[in-house]
Image (cartoon, rainbow, N blue to C red):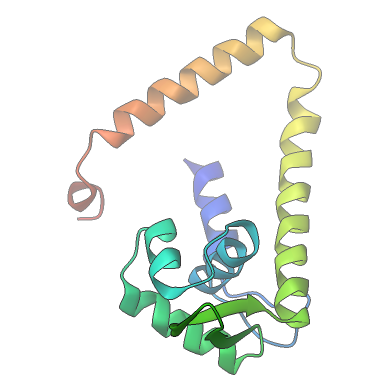
Length: 143
């Protein structure tokens, strides 16, 4: 649990991601979604992230104010706003990916010398823990 807590504490803090603006987890997740998916509209981003259109709109407003995204009317459907990353948003996206690569390299450096049977055993243990945790109601976990 200490490892999971440390990992969570790292990623729940606001960070600069190579820019001059602090970005919160919800904001960098939105930037990642915009960059990696084909969804560039409020409703599509809401479906992709599993959050409400209102929540997407609020995050988009914050990101636009921070210069991470731009919005413009979709020429194919004038009732929709198209959302894209600015160079600053692309920088944040790239920096976030780099931090994930660093974290992955730590795991890989530890695991690379283990024999396959030990790695498979570890994966099975983690899958079992995950399946057990998913059966616990979230409101019970955060009493």
